[in-house]
Image 1 (cartoon, helix red, strand yellow):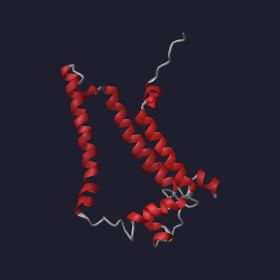
Image 2 (image 1 turned 60 degrees about the vertical axis):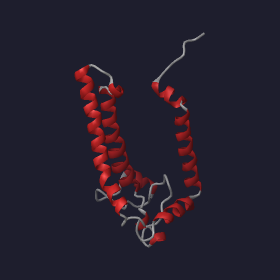
Image 3 (image 1 turned 30 degrees about the vertical axis):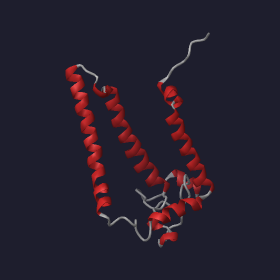
Image 4 (image 1 turned 90 degrees about the vertical axis):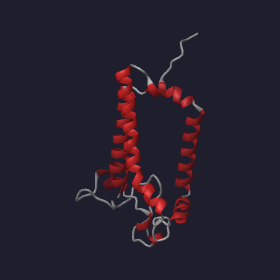
Length: 165
């Protein structure tokens, strides 16, 4: 009998919750790509000239607290890591590799890839900017790169946009 190859990623993909999350992402992606009107319909439920709960106190508090929550969570992880290093224990199983992984995911995943690359380079308009909600920009379906960059960081369009135009 050949030996079983084991890799953490393969083990993670075997989990029911992982398959459920990936399946829901795929189904939602197909739905939004094949039926772009669904995207607009969902946005219309929450947008009427502005996000309809923008003035609610709890949403302002929630919006303002996200940064503090992330920083506080990082502080708790750093404290647990320091405790583990000093005491030789494995509290929450936090070690140096997990701390570095967490920092890299936050920096590259949310920071660089999503905010700098996807949002800035895809040029997809926010709901308040599209014609369907009173703006002047055209709606861009999910996963499509806009023919115009709404938030250019430099004077010319990038190579991907030149190829799309």
